[in-house]
Length: 449
Image 1 (cartoon, helix red, strand yellow):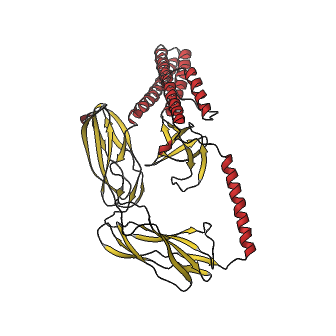
Image 2 (cartoon, one colour):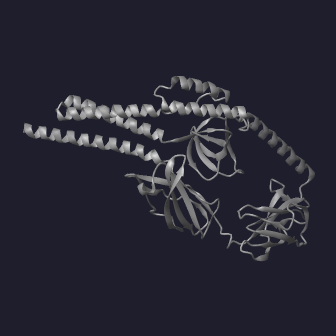
Image 3 (cartoon, one colour):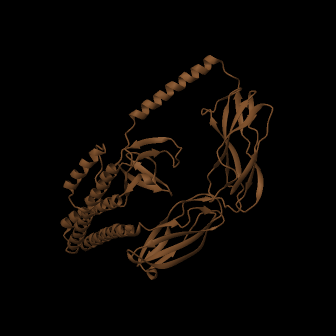
């Protein structure tokens, strides 16, 4: 009976030992998996069109092609893998490998492809791909001509009111001329040229090219259509054609009396004053074009990088915070020390070895104590590793927007030098986390750590 109990205790001890070793190996392998996190496949061309082969490239430093194997696995619908190739190159890092992967996108839209499975020198990794926006193919897309309302900005239309409109064209390689038409329910006439016609567009894009400013005066109320305009254009596949502007319907109201107009103007003035006061109370942002400020932020970056290398960076933190006060930063987070991480890792290994020794010697009390300490340290190492794997940046100029568009609403203006976490990115925009909030900021307004 006593022998059976001893056997069960030994069996439990070995199971706990195996669990600790597996947890340790998992944390260690995860750390080394972050080694090639800088390798990101980016599109070769500035624009990606539907129905065409699109190449993505990435470079792995100090690795030869024979040591690299990539495998493209599951892809989203309407995306096809075409080919891949490896090339050895010479750069400042020595002999490196450049990998080219070619995909074909069958539809337009935003695509975030899954990481590419790779094997680099006996290790397995996931190499990420930059999210892309696929545009219409210039060989098949047809030009579009449309109106947009410039004034009034509140989009309230009344009979007898002057309405300023802008005519634009998109997806046209050449814009030659335009012809207007008239309707009985409105006065409609060109006001001023925005482009000298004929206009030749050098490069295909999804940008709208202004053609003309028009003024329209509704003579009645109700739903009134803006008179269509015929524009002679040339498609990107070489065909000349007349394109009619897209229909635009305005909901025109009856004319208001003078006192109502004055009341509306008074309300608009109050609103503008309130907006102005809010703007004055917003967090100040210093222009990134200030050379002195740029030097301060660069010095903050350098100190943060040094802070990561030291085990006890107390003096570095003190010096950094003095510089941050120049940027009106009161409370900032410290960097996680990589050196301290390896110290914790080494201590964890020591306690695991002691646990194994006492398990072999059947010292139950000491074995349990060192097992608890080893498991606690493994959990701390895992949490520490997660923090080290995060990406951070410093604000150069801090207008954070709700969506990645310059016309979107402003979330907040962050002070220059503020430290934010990088959560995602597109070609020109970075998705950041600041405090408990998130938002988008232009890539050029960040200094990456």
